[in-house]
Length: 388
Ligand SMILES: *[C@@H]1O[C@H](CO)[C@@H](O)[C@H](O)[C@H]1NC(C)=O
Ligand SMILES: *[C@@H]1O[C@H](CO)[C@@H](O)[C@H](O)[C@H]1NC(C)=O
Ligand SMILES: *[C@@H]1O[C@H](CO)[C@@H](O)[C@H](O)[C@H]1NC(C)=O
Image (tube, rainbow, N blue to C red):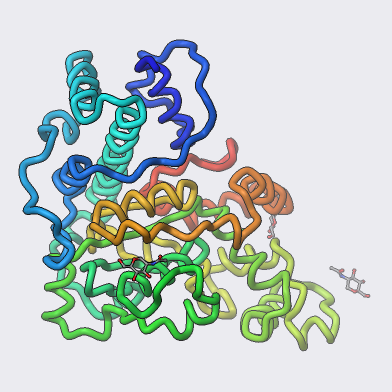
């Protein structure tokens, strides 16, 4: 298989919409069918540790002492665009890493994932420097880490973002921590309410500081409008004994003219438009909720400086990449999300468009303003052309 073909397949597998600098060398080629990503080699793990700024895995899991990584910082960490020389170096290194096409493809995919992490962190840092300068040196309060779960054995901190794969993450954390044998055996309710997971705010200030300094800090995000629609559908479009009375009632009562007595009483039947009116109202009649609170305030990314930023749009790939790079057991992979949630990415964005078409342009703009920092920090493009 020629190199160009490898690149095309790597790009296809990572479902990348923005073409990457490497892509310039891609010619037309026939790529064969989809393959499962092979497991990471040891050299790839070294590469990851060197370039993701991940702390070393826990001593029990460490296979060999980590040594200097395969690639130099100037290659993977630099701000300059990829030069021809770099490209040649990359190719040589990956060929050296493995002479088989699958190995070569694997190495390129890993490099791509490493680069993706570097660029996500760099973008976040730029936005934080611009909008919250100096925040990274400030002391951290318990409240600011209240959404973070601690997994001691793998020295992992995971900030829970609802509607961005968090149930499956809880399952994985339970397996990593030894309270479950396999992610397959864990029902949804157990993952959420009987998970034996500790939150970071339960620790002392000293223990919080120590863990923030030395553990791998992980954040998974999702396109903000999609996350919002997902939360709305989940909480308001099916029976819910908490969200209907607690949020539905005040929302209907404030934003619906001529509401029926039944609607006022049950809080059932909130429309997406009413929900958004509540969301963007500075005097909203009922408070925030973690399912629609922006990630920028849930997880305090400028303050806490996460090592790894995954995206729901590439959930399994990002999650498995992280699991391999922290030295998780080889038989632990991220649970198959699509089996649980039938919404594929494309359907999801189409559905999001459909919901937002119920709003007028002012309301859409206000919703965008509400999530503006999330859009900037995590590099999501603005979802409608008329937004500014
Ligand atoms: C994974 O391997 C460990 C031992 O290394 C074993 O205890 C565990 O049951 C395995 N899990 C699955 C899901 O096969
Ligand atoms: C509310 O009901 C009154 C009387 O039935 C009607 O005149 C008015 O137009 C309704 N308002 C709205 C916004 O539907
Ligand atoms: C959009 O709807 C809001 C009510 O949520 C209304 O106040 C506003 O005037 C509408 N804007 C436009 C441009 O129609």
